[in-house]
Figure (cartoon, rainbow, N blue to C red):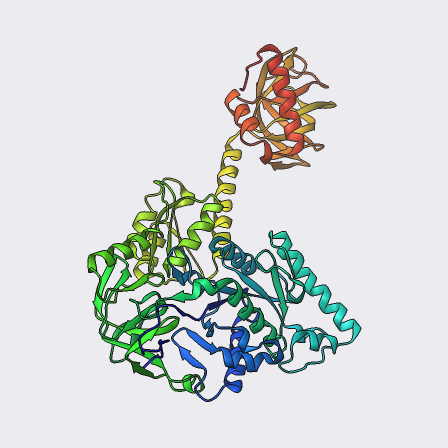
Length: 604
């Protein structure tokens, strides 16, 4: 049976302090999993057999074990919180999945940053999520042991091991650490080495660590316990015997039990005979607990993937819940025990919590699918910041019906599905290819959106290129002296391009004052005897012009212009200015200025 705090009469203590929940975030390969493994491994080594308990999705490290690991840094008499509960699955996925009423379930977070790499795309993404959820955090500046010349001191407090390094190594490490502090400052966080921080509510503590050697781990645990004790104690007070409240981490299959949910309970207690309301894809699911399952102790969890059955689980704890009708349960959705309350009232509470996740959608936009409610919310939030409209947002794999919705989009750039952490079903993928719907898949929100934006840019560039292809481009050119090769039918003359881009099949004018006089149509361009489609500033080419006669309609030395239709001039000036070259813009300006001397509103 799981332990619960009891008072002198043996009854559950209504004012018990629960364990703070700590999540680990950071960029891929910066050492999130290694850090958790080091904490777990050190905890097992420091604790009595069975003192460290492996929970579903989390590891509980009691205060007495933290005290042993931290040595002189932690006096257990200074604390009355029971320890720390580390979420095992590192990264944004678990963090955004872990939800409590209206916020992040994690009480505190560790942002892991590689001292060599500094801030990377997922670091910025993690910072954004921490800001959005207003979760207090510390920075673990990891891999200090990789600084060239580092002399490791296994499991040592960081200031002691830093003092033991050469001056050059200390200088190199400090330079890397202050780059991280600078990055935090650039993201609106005041930060410093944790031992220099006086006010942790307004400043971020940076803890140099090595997940490889354990150096700095005592400091990390000390800061986490200190912050939790000082700032979170009031929030940790729960009615441990009350009806349990939790969050679905994952929906899984368990042999002999069918569909189960892995959950974190953050308030009250769940018992084996309880009735539950669980958030589902199509609304709340009401069901009865069949079994509560917990893993074997930590030392055996790696090899013995078996569970033991318990009668009850009290907050904060991880548990696998076996119950009927959980197939449509959603990761990130709330779980609430009914017990002696009205089931309708509890269903209404779950519905209200699910409603907080609603993503605002538009009539025109893209389709997004994500693996959890929290992920969906994080993805939608980032898309909103990037001003990308959403037509439909749902949890679950990409199915044919999602493709059918995406193909109704009016804009080509919106015929897209963004799939975050979910599968694309085979028939959906085939249908998407058939209907020209683009499906983007990635495990990183930042990368997913970047891939989509690259796609949009490619479409818009192609559209602009198509428009430019069909728009008359500005050009002025001069007939060269002694370069008349044929007088008429068509006139063939040598010209020099004074500015812009001269193309075949353009109409040609010359200005008589402010009035353009059409002289004919440019049929062909030759450069050293080779036919070309266009010529640009500074080039000398031979052109054939259908219509005029040299010596009567046009003369050697004349300046001629490509005739720009008024509609084209308006588009060039108002929409495509940045898409044409600087000298084309200059020729366009000259052309418009001349036309507007006669008619001020021409081309506007």
